[in-house]
Amino acid sequence: MGNLFEMLLASILNHNIALVYILGMCPLIAISTNVKNAKGMGIAVVLVVTITALINWPIYQLLKATQTENLALLIFIITIAATVQILEIFMERFIPKLYNAFGIFLPLITVNCVVLAVSLFFVNREYTFAETGFFAFGSSVGWMLAIILLAGVREKMATHSDVPKGLKGKGITFIILGILALAFIGFTGIANI
Amino acid sequence: MNIFVPIILVGVLLVIALILIIIDKALGGGGEKMILINDEKVIPVTGDDSLLNILSSHKIFIPSACGGKATCGFCKFQLIEGGGEIKPTELPFLNQKEKEEGIRLSCQVKVRDNMKIAIPKELLNAKEYKTKVTHIEDLTYDIKLVRFELINPTEMHFKPGQYAQIKVPGIDVIRAYSIASHPKYNNQIELIIRQVPNGQATTFVHQALEVGDKIILTGPYGDFYLQEDSDREMICIAGGSGKAPIRSILYYLRDQGMPRKVKYFFGAKSKRDLYYTEEFEQLSKEFPNFEYIPALSEPKPEDNWTGEVGLITDVVDRNTKDLSEAEAYLCGSPGMINACIKVLNRHQVKQENVFYDSFS
Image (cartoon, rainbow over the protein chains, first blue to last red):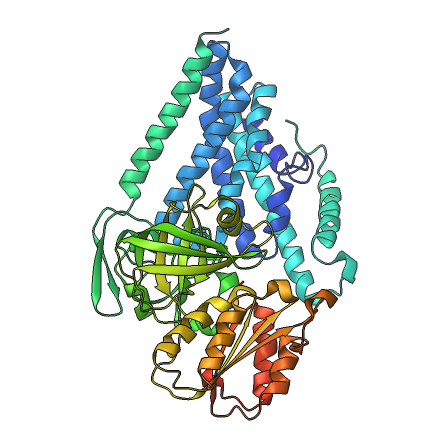
């Protein structure tokens, strides 16, 4: 159990998937203009990543049993796309406000590399089912933390800072991201995966 | 090869397809919903599709050039009740006033509950027509006249100046063109179509369309048409293929004995862009009330051009006096129309008497 908790902590902080592994940059930069949307996107990613990892794990065991591991990448992508599709139908039906706020970005989660990366990591690192669950949840919460931090900074900067013209928008965002990533290096050694 | 590879692939896809179908069935709008149009027509709806598709399946054709991808912004309607909030995909096409009035894009509104909507009256008259191409004629090097015979239904009742849409077979691109023919001949319509570089529909018409081809048309559409109740003096300004709606208007007026004073300015680059010149000159000989003023902006030396030279706006400026009692009908590119409106304003034209059809 301690091992699982350590894994959760590590995947949120010193193995943060966005700031240390630099994955899932596209939505991280695109939807981080205000905290409200960033939160929504973060929650969606947490949901999708955790659910798909938990679905992909038993499927991978099946692939292993039938010696068809080479299909893993293909099958993972298919399950991810299907999960996002299902999530989209649910959200459109029950939380249309959030669905509308996402617009194009919800379908884009399909190609958010965080989702696939988590599924591929558990294969590489030979995680158990429980470990996969904690790792997936931790990684996605880490990604959410990163996007909310970034959005918080950007929201403040939009009203308070005088950003040079050439750096406005994406340029300054990369710099903020870099500083955030440096800060996360400070967590090194806190926990191990 | 491992025998499990195809089994697993097909299996996973099957399972996922099944789950999606079940969820779609379980969550998709099950009950019957009602759409009330203009407080008079009621359409019952089952399932949840976009309003654009539902209306077109009930033979109400809202103009749409992109076919529901939210890229053209043509399929606007007024939402009075129900339907949910404005989606981000619609925002680029709506200005502040439209947002307040509840204007939406019908391709982006899904019918989930009872709705009350308002659409322009003439859209209720628009129908889908099966047609046959009976005549194709080159008017200039890049403009063609195409005549369609209406097969089913056999008659289209349009006002001179309105437009119709053609559906390009195979790629389902829909494009709008003004009707150039006389409204009296209601079992055929003529469109004047100019080749647009890389335009999907115009390339089809210019390269592939042949006499005898069967084409689907919808129409008539548009609030650009001759104001029949008025007897004001008319100024018509057209450029390029913009001759089409004016031609229809002039045919109509000719039958009435040209009761109004009409000045028709047509702008082109050089002589090879002019068409129907004799026809209109003949008309102006016949009726002193009608004056045809073609103008070339860049006449070539070999054109031997003796008429007006210059930008259409300058020519209009030179040849008009006080327009405070006149009606203006403009058709052409948005740039040309904006420039012409500025010139007309200088001649005291009243805003409510300016009608335009902008080809974009």
